[in-house]
Image 1 (cartoon, rainbow, N blue to C red):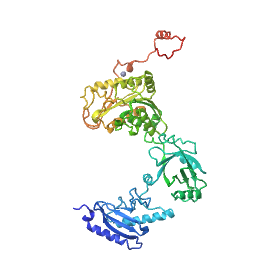
Image 2 (image 1 turned 180 degrees about the vertical axis):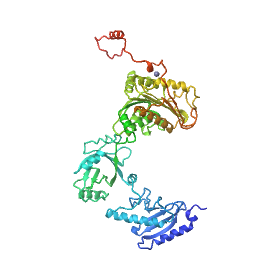
Image 3 (image 1 turned 60 degrees about the vertical axis):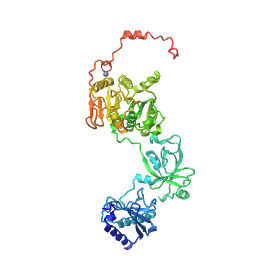
Length: 568
Ligand SMILES: [Zn+2]
């Protein structure tokens, strides 16, 4: 059976031709000429020229015609005739894929297209509503528009309250130069409700609000000379050398324009809201915005946890990692090729800033806390970590863990640690909360003793799941890491909000194998604090011996002050 519908259904094609011929007659004959053609692939196309402006249209048929709806587009293909037109050029008509019936024909589509074009012409003279089932959404406006004006609530308010011309400042946000963002209004008064990632301190340009007189038409000419003429006629303002103008009509409507040498770009209005936390429950958000989180290890796991916490409204971070982003890490780290050559702490700091609604506080320490480094720098990092409300160990390094466990116990901070296993099997998320769980070291010891009963993990680089290091990268995809990172972030958020009362150690299996019977299996380990030998868990602070304290005090001779001396 031939695949082409017209080969299969020649009757149908003949009926199509009859209905087209009928368009030349009737009360309003609007068709000038038409012809049928086969394209290179042998698909039939109907070309029709309307009487109206001799506009040429092309009708294409889907392979499953007449069960599917044909499409109509103007020729040449880049012709824009209507606001009811898709990016491909295809017109959005009263008949579409959702209400198509095989009884309809290509002639119905052409009639509908003619009606749309006629109404678009009328609309240029008077405001009429075009009957269509399609309302152009923001994406289409941006696709057809010349650029975007990002408007914050403060800018909108200042705009609405300005009766006379007001100078403002604007900038190009990075990456996409077709966007314009007002940054200060009036000039010199910075807007405070713009996400920090969008503000570039190094560039600011003058712009002006142009209040238009009563009766200024909505249709603004986009040839520079005519645009200037429009401004001169309908306002008291002159643009002078200001590149950006926001015109304001008396009915409250406003639109931004970029005045370039050769043309005028009409900017699509787009609201800019910092209120991006509506996906985080209020109570949780309030807790997270007040917290300081310390993250040690900004590899694939740690970088994802950091950015995810920032998205969930954590605004205060202490980041510790010695390494630099290299190109081979882009496959799994949150950092991108834009960050290659940047210290990981710096790259992640920027990524955090990119998703924060207000300027975050990020302290960074370029060091490996488990390796030889300056004792004073090391102490500073540990002190900063001790000042965090929650600690995250994403190093998968036993020495780093022990140090963090010590900091967490000393300062009474919760610690979350996580690790991804090789072979895409899954990973582990663990946590210790002071006053609720045994100390982190006890939890780790219990886990190691339990896991010794298990068969060795396949494709694991080492005996125990604890000793993986970044030098021997595990075989795991970005999705594998993301799964564990998401679980670790969720654990951190739940602990921060006082909602976590589950097992200390959770093993999350992505695929069947090792200790996991099936994909997405999980195993958990509750650890009881029954190791009476652990000083952290069981030794309570007692007042020091007063006699010893006196003797210790006597060691200090206050006749001279301690000095930094290279000889000591
Ligand atoms: Zn303990």
